[in-house]
Length: 391
Ligand code: PHB
Image (cartoon, rainbow, N blue to C red):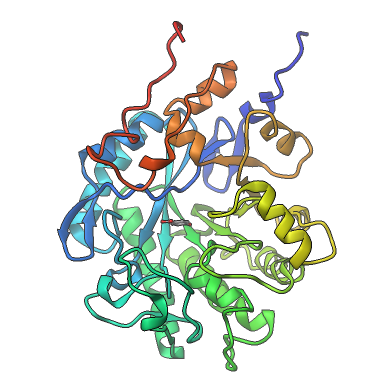
């Protein structure tokens, strides 16, 4: 037998809940801000978005959409398509049809940003969060977050939000998605409940990690009941700094959450948890993030391994994301540290990423300046080349 490529482990099949993956190169959720404005805060997937996802679809490959607002008041970001109007369902249906024609699997990532927006993007309504602590600095529209601090959600609003996640998951199925990924990371609403530097509540949704995990476990229960547990995943980022989250003890706190997820009854236990590596940060580069974790956080080496082990006890699969490259992705699978690896930036720049990794072909470089929109919108979106032998 010839020697195996270090990436060979990514090209074995994987059963993930209801889905039969033919490879383990997953398209990570990436905000691209190129959908069509229908009215203030309402953006609809268009033909260019269809082309973008279709280009990246591969047989038996799992794709996660960009973070997708579950309601008008869940984000308000320009160019970001939601899943709360009939027009958005119809737009997404074109995306899912195109992706399914190439035998790929696609999940809608369900998003609520909580305090990470401003009244100017929400028809003048105030932002909500677990507590009243604003993010420092300025929002996308240039206003200072502190000029309109978030309002802590009432228990009634929490219950309504849980129901909104379930309703959005049903709309995602109506739009042809194979399932959903609940966005519980990156400093957005659910992470604002999990992280103890943000959540200062004194009711049953704050204080202990049991309480801080409550909203996310209720959402998992509601969404799995709505569309079936084997069609649901969840993304978490215990070591996240983005949007001003810094937890005092990620190992202990997310360890508790993972054990709770692994112990859910069969009908509520999600197919997978998708976690962001400690070394990844939206703002700091890899070495700056590692240095910062070493100086400001736990004494133990930051790692996702304990979470993986806790989840495995309940048969919950594990996807790892964050700065994976051709030289370290295969090892993550062979060492059993994850079942699959998600790639964001490499998938942006390489529509045929799974094929390139499998064949050992060179990768295109990505252009960071066009990640969050460009003029024309095709630039840095649908104009990256597929591999040709002349490269
Ligand atoms: C972003 O729009 O910058 C963004 C969205 C979702 C994430 C991370 C970043 O999870």
